[in-house]
Image (cartoon, rainbow, N blue to C red; front, side, top):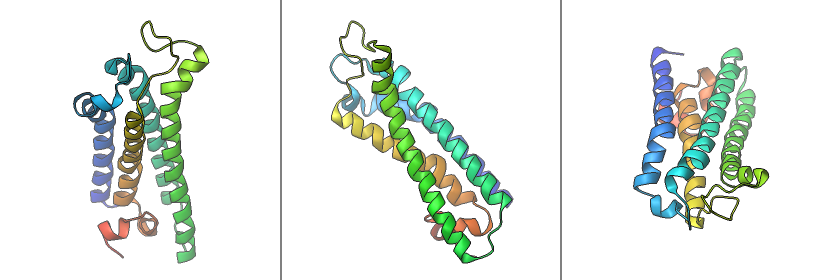
Length: 178
């Protein structure tokens, strides 16, 4: 990889990390608070014990997938265009699995965790889940997709080596051809 690709990769990881650990919560607290707050829900508590841990798990998953992608692309060189086309399916599978993993993580930290332990996340509440309204769920699921774009797609677009850049959707348009 060229030095500019390494810098792009490092910048993507730093921006993605800042977004997940600082930007999202600020956005949830200041812009979309009304969408996330259900009956009896303390948004700060939800972000601390529900949403943030879920996005942290997704962040770890995306970084792991990114490391696997780079290990795979650096350890192999493609010999034909057919090999490149086969890699495209693997990339899409990884991206899809990351989105599904993020959605499952949201469900786990918002609902399953509390139902398995039989406790209520709400002080004095009788429900064993966070009562997030439908628009809040839609927002959380969309943010999972945005996180996968920021943490997996963008770094693979900007820094996939050699012929592997033809695998990632949009890479040729953004980085150019051969």
